[in-house]
Image (cartoon, rainbow, N blue to C red; front, side):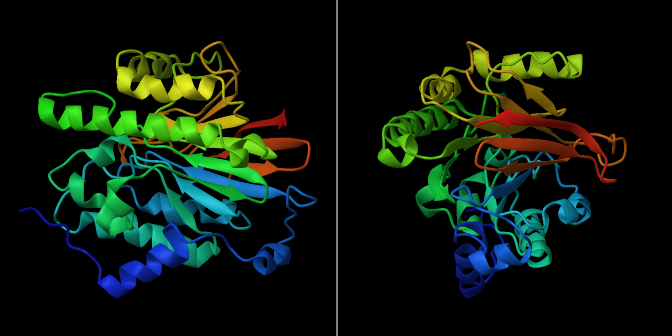
Length: 310
């Protein structure tokens, strides 16, 4: 049996409680950095994604995370899940260090690469997700936040039909949960409704690199289990969606496919040839009437900026 090299049980529980699933920075800490909340204050969050084992990005992007209420680590931080201790060194430890440096808790969203590898079935134990279920919802300063799991987006030669069928069942269960969530009072009465997931719906953004368009289209149109989530969200009055997967940042306008803006974070799979000018961090600052989205490169350059009305 393949087993992940895990942290101690006591440390795992402490990290889970304090950082990954355990709530937000205290209101006192937020006041110290001058934040306001939605009911007279503002909400701020950041998203990073698709680092593909380049852990140096965590530390280099920390300055633009300070002052946020939470950071979303939106998938494909690993290339695959192995039983060699890499989950600890490439995912758990960097998230822990990011929290300690910024004071901002991390929310993990699973990418398709975190479903791959010989120990993928054990990843939830390292991160403290009960029963292997990664999707969840929480309300933060009057905004309802959904953290969804698009699981594996396509079958491959390395994946058995049985394992892909498991993802189909998982996504069916997630869709049923999502239908209940968007019908709930927590969702319907929220001041804003944000969705975080790894694989975006099919989009075509005129400002995005043309290489980004085909992968986005392919990633969802051919895989029915994933598209079921977007079908539910289409009529759910979503304020905005934040995603990754494509490795090229983009702001996409509302469309028939997604009647809400989709903000796609950049990313890199090759730490040697990667374009360090790409937007590797997305930050969103929400006020009572609007939300401003900025995407930063490693040197702090703002690559994209846009203000959206609530």
